[in-house]
Image 1: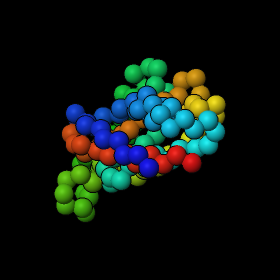
Image 2 (image 1 turned 45 degrees about the vertical axis):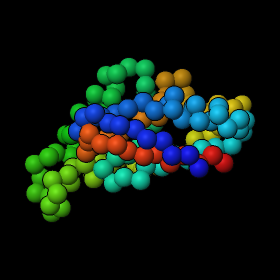
Image 3 (image 1 turned 180 degrees about the vertical axis):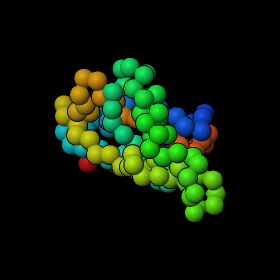
Image 4 (image 1 turned 90 degrees about the vertical axis):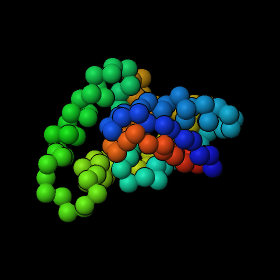
Length: 129
């Protein structure tokens, strides 16, 4: 298993981590198999979506802010309840296929780390199968 660290810079931020994950796959030399990516944080998540147009990231954050507003009467008293809900919507784990030594992603797809309670130092666990 490999642990990657990411330093986020904003309260909410979507970071393309495709290159980091692809580098780990290449380093191992695995030709066929899979990789599990897990985020051990309750206010951050993972998703796969378009990584070519930066407007897509802005749209995702806009939609999440609309669905999960900051001003609801949340019971959790730490002030980061919206971050917990957004992270739950994104999920904390991805499984990807490796074929011919490369991640199987669509033309426009990328792996995105979703920060909802930053800035922070975050960890990602990668397990190659």
